[in-house]
Length: 524
Image 1: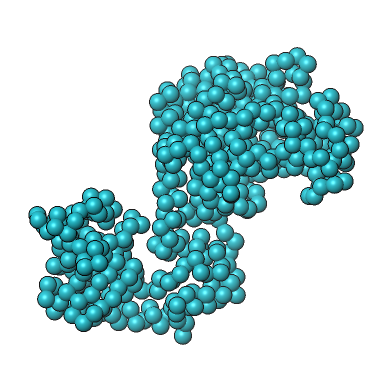
Image 2 (image 1 turned 120 degrees about the vertical axis):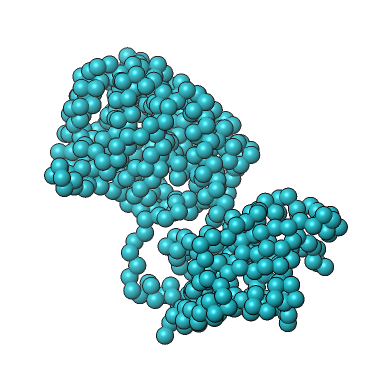
């Protein structure tokens, strides 16, 4: 019999004994007067004398995280909202049945305690219990040292235990909630309206990504889970909603990594009568405010770097490649070299001769795609401080407006991405609002699909129809909530900031290894 099953059976027997004492096995409610954090905030500074006169009565509840018995009395620590408070239980105060209950309690059980606050001889703030109420039995053992488990994925698979054992994990998700709250406050205060758009689309659009597919039985049609809400939000701007945003779940059928989860959360917002430079200014103010709201300062630490959100540098994609070009690859490229397929090929050859991993080279790919790949390898890893990388190739930007400068209008667009800590966290455009040009862009994407690019954009006739009614000059942007939270909480993996990340199914041998590690943890 596995250790977990033995403990389960033993605790089930204790539960029967608790019921025999007149306690419900699964009570319906317990009325509290204070939360444990409230008690710690309000009374931690009080002296023993101040707690005694007048006496402070409290009703508290929580999970037992430590417990010991010393003859006719005992101490336990009870946890609620990630904070712990000591309780003191004495036979003479609670009576025979309640003390028998106390002796049947285990780590992980939930209890309610009614009593008054005092300080022990060691000075610890404690509840002197007068009434003890059983709330629920933990039938499986909590690990003694959760982080000691070698299989780190166990923490993600059983987040309910991770949150119990590791207060730092709880703090990450509290900060994540603050990120969303701050974004909402900032946008609402600047005249934006929050909306909801469909999560099932007849056409996978608004981004360059491979979608998940589903089927609607009644309508007998295939649908795509949303890869981005962009085209729906811009339809709303056409309809006169000049400032609009959505905090949305997106789904992309792509690989899983420390930076990618198949479903993720993104803020997407649109601002009529603005362009991408207006959006840079707005974004700098917004993200600076979010950092301040979440951490109380514009400075955070991520992956060993100190990052200051109060100031953003701005580089064009070509300027970034030139600036970060490695010395071992020869002379820095010049602006003119980005205009020729031959010089781009030579640029990649020079880089690959001395650096790994190599930049991939597809001779049939448009020049703009080659430039984007060069940027990804040469510059992106070094963008630690908040940076706007602007002016993207048209070939990878089917929804962006062309550059307004005549000499660059044909191949470059008004688009920027936000990089912090080596991560791309946002993407923005001066939105393309010429319906005929948009049709030509979609047709170009269809040619890329025919060439084998599964992520290329599909044709969306209704979106072109919407543009034909008139989209005013508009700037739009998407910001990844998960990656933004990673940066502000110094979390190295996206799975650390998603409560229930997508994971590969466990094989039986992996399950057995996990059980063995938990057995070892329970014995410590």
